[in-house]
Length: 217
Image (tube, rainbow, N blue to C red; front, side, top):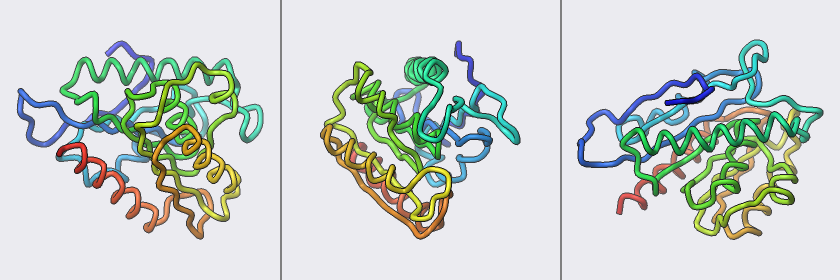
């Protein structure tokens, strides 16, 4: 693939050369890396392509996908370029691998969740479902982007009640934004800070399992 991203890819355990398979794209949080999130979707390794991307910006102790002016305000020029590059990555992956274009899921944590939500609006029906953990939807995405319809989309949005990095009310606002544009949203809150609790993992796993089962039928 012609991409600026370093990434790790695993393919379904047993593949039929005449069949296409679901894909899950993983986007980590600021200061993390491509080995952080695959553990969240290990239950789906046998049936899905899994792509875990590394942010292109060094952000100790790891990497970032974009920089910020302050919490809730990404540096717009960098954000826009990364979002375009992510769209290209998804499209090239669908073209190059045995991926069913109607079974494309994006999971992100923190700034990865910000990008996952933004990708849904930028790509419309090319994204089947989104799992957004402890993120938000930048206002400029829905106010200034040429957004595509998301009335087909299934979204799992979650947030910690005591999130010290991204205010928990921003998770509620993301839920309301997605519902306003017609997406079906599963929204969960947890007695946690900026992280993923075992209960959160259980719920997002159940969400993906249900969506994958429905898409197989």
